[in-house]
Amino acid sequence: MPLAFKPILRGIVYAVVAALILSGLIGILTNLTSLPSSEIVNNGIFSVSVFVGAVTAARMAGTKGLYYGICVGVGVVVLILIISAIMLPNPFSWQGILLKSFYALVAGALGGVIGVAIK
Image (tube, rainbow, N blue to C red; front, side, top):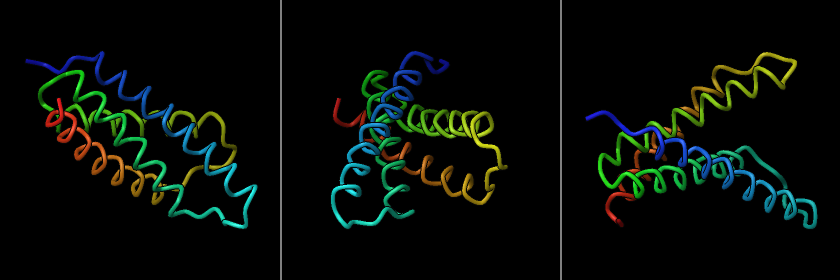
């Protein structure tokens, strides 16, 4: 039985919305305090966002959480690649993309497994 597209799409949307909300909160926090912005915080926001999207997709599907979570992670990375290719004038770093892909796969897999478990 193939994977349904609707849970994956909803998971990607939830991941993007979570990333925007968390980025906004961290942006406000770094602007109002002396807290510096760092790559660790950015990677944390990205991982938590993919995790939220994967949990959502897996809960909606009810089964095959690992697959749905990984699909959400891959979908978010592809979306980032497309947006980066369109918006950024300079070529992006392949090392950074590989690192983000690793974070997305791990967070997606964990989120998918947890999403099915809490259904």
